[in-house]
Amino acid sequence: MAQSPVLVDPQGGAIYQLRCSEGELFQVCFEGHCLFCDSLPAGQAHLRLMEQRLRQEFG
Image (cartoon, helix red, strand yellow):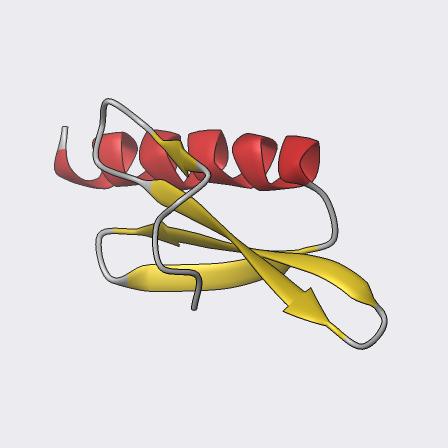
């Protein structure tokens, strides 16, 4: 994982930029759940969805 996130959301989520042999990869983490995306805009969209689902589940 990168040493520091490239984006920290006010809700507590974070996006890390990883370098790999084929380019960049972004790790999206929120409330102990993580997923990987191939772009920062896709990571931001997934982070918003993760936050919305958590709010729906726990009101």
